[in-house]
Image 1 (cartoon, rainbow, N blue to C red):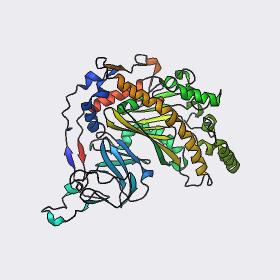
Image 2 (cartoon, rainbow, N blue to C red):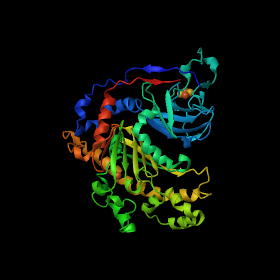
Image 3 (cartoon, rainbow, N blue to C red):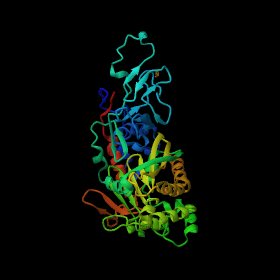
Image 4 (cartoon, helix red, strand yellow):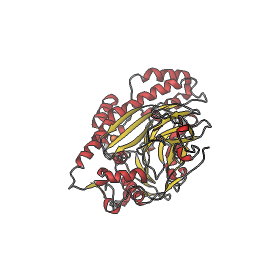
Length: 460
Ligand code: FES
Ligand SMILES: [Fe+2]
């Protein structure tokens, strides 16, 4: 463990005089929250700094000395499992003159040497050495010459999060009721473990919140993804497979949106295949999985080898019809992990990592590769045929918001219709699939965060 030297800053760097109460109303939000560069800069501290932000998955750094590059807001970071096995998020920023010290996206290294003047650092962040130290009258044991790192990094069942906010709650408390769908999603995998695969890397010219607003939006699907739905319907005719639950009015279909607190939300599109304990019955997911050409031979082999257990095995190949959205930047949908990465007020990366099952216990008797090959097929359709529709919408919203005189963006579907909602004892809210209640609740949290003064700290 490197020496802890916290550099506290009690107030955000930006003088933020924005009146957030004027921008966020119960039924609408102001266009400036998507377009104002000063608000974006404040978000990089108060949200991407002040709350727990998803950084990486443990399967990307399975062994000591493994690292993967990432970002906290716009700050470049190196997520590393150091030589002692401790997970850290180092800032990829040389303490000498500010250059990034690591420029390889993923790898394994005990030390990082800055390419500019050759200072080198252990993967715990501690300075290892500088070239020709006789030219300095400096004590390089001073921790200010170590790489800065995030003071709090925690992992929840493989998902690595970090925050600069020393007063933030424990990660498990921050996730709160969102842990339940997350646990259910993980526990359908052998041993409750998944591994991240390669990704669809996409980018759009729009604000990051446009993607988060859309993450549980059941209102747009029939209209925005019309061509994808038509293609599926051609392949699957009358069967209740794939996205068939969007054939008619979504509010009448067996699905709902659940607001979970702290800006997290959940879209459950499979309550009709669960028993009363919310468990998915074996074979039920495979029953509703869409047709993907080429899967027949895999299915035949799995049925042949596994007999009675084939249904449960085939379920592992299926894309689970849920969206689990962890504020501010993680979305789990189907078998994907989608990560939102703000780059500028009007530019965002969205990366869809595929996931694979890990069969350490041998449940699949050596057929894990077959299941993962089928998973790849189920993971092709949405990012390629659906996400492009969404990204187009986000870019077209950003364009529309240039009408500066037309100030408001409405999110009032379901508002003042209390019969549409169920308020549960844990403070969460369940509503129809198309309602915008999850957005309204999230923007209350956003406004609270933006008016707070978090104590942000670095560690060296
Ligand atoms: S900027 Fe890194 S060694 Fe000079
Ligand atoms: Fe969509």
